[in-house]
Length: 113
Length: 108
Image (cartoon, rainbow over all chains, first blue to last red; front, side, top):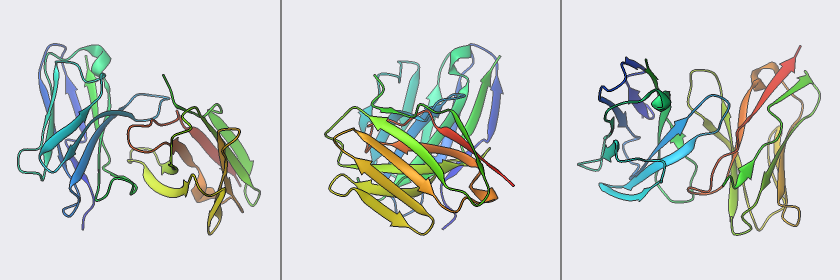
């Protein structure tokens, strides 16, 4: 078990470009979460999957954001037409049961210039 | 609307002494709480949790206390060690929200 893996670790993009991040959860975990963290704040929930079904979406997840988990394994988070306000650390986490602790990846740091 | 708050952005403690990190919440329906620890350039890692039916949970040097009437919980670390220097987050269940974190600095 290598833990939760996120790629890339860093992404610098120009405003208006699209970006996609990937998360590989712990293999036996069926629940996968995306969070966003900005400096000086705690992680903010974005969305959550149980297997391939996206069950919850935060109102923080604007129309420019889309997440998928097509086969119930890895997940992708895409941001279209990036804005400078999208600059943040994007964290992925997984767990096997609703009330069990989350296992986080090391995140993807996005910088929009 | 933030349901979990950590009002101390940072805390400095002498090595060997007790570190006390505080957290307040607003949602009385939360049935458990979690503490996570985060080192720079890494994701948060789970530290300890407490069920709302308990008022204390202990794991080695770490103890979490829950005061439901005050909607307050605290994490005690004793004795504090240099490796404890990190940011500590308090979190509610599910999408219940996270505090902004407290940066703990252990001075040698």
